[in-house]
Length: 269
Ligand code: MN
Image (cartoon, rainbow, N blue to C red; front, side, top):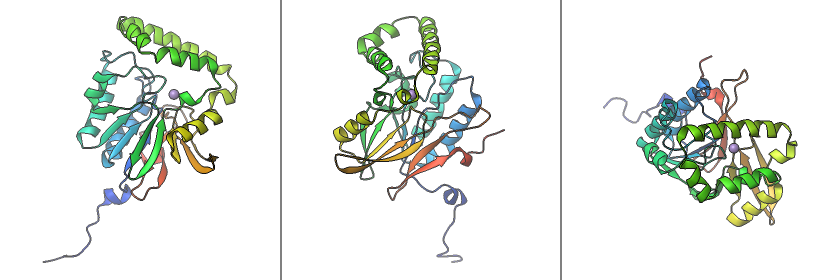
C-alpha cells in the first residue's frame, strides 16, 4: 500500500472550514441589482451548501407581492435556494418587513421551513434567539402601527386577494413612501430599542441574539437580568454600489460565531 496513512488534504475544505450554521439577511434582492444577486448565488453555492443549516433572517427580497408572482428573477432565487435544500442543508426563513408576504407555495418550491419571528433555535447545544429585527424598533411608532396592520392575517388575506399588478403598484407606492419617511427620521428611531432587546433576551432566556434589519453590523455585549448577552447584527448587501458591502455570520462546530465578509466571494468587477 502506497501512501497509507498520509492525510488527504482537500484544498476546498481547507479554504472553507466546516460550519454548523450560516445566518444572512437584508440582501434586498431585486432584478435591478444583478451583482448583488450574483454574489448571493455564489454564497449559496460555495458556502451555504457546505453547512448544515442556513438561516435566512428577513428582507432577502426587496419586496414580495405574493407567491403567485412568477417573475423569472424570483424563479432564479427560488431555484438557487432549492439547490441548497436539495443538497441536504436545512434552510430556514424568518420574514422581513419587505418580504413578509412569503407563503407556503414559496416555502414548498424552495424546500424552506418558515419560522415565526422571533424564534429560539437550538443549534449544536446553543440557544440563539433569531429575529429580523424590525419588531425591536419600537421607537418608530408609525412603523410599529403599520407593522401591526400588515401582519394581521385578515389584512394579508384581503391584500393577496387583489390582482397581482394592483398589489405591485401598491407596494411600489409604499416603498416610495418609506424612502421619503426614512429621510426625515432621527438616527435612533431607525435602530433597535434597548428595552425591547432586553425584553426579548429575558423572554427567550438566551445569551445570544442574531438579527438584521438595521444595516448596522456589529456585536454588542450587554447585560440583561444580571447575565451577559451578545447581540449580533447582520449587514445588508449591496454589490451594485461603488463600495460593495455584505456578509454573513457563521457558527463553527466549536460554538464560535464568526463574521464573514464579502471579500471571500470574488465578485466580477
Ligand atoms: Mn428590514
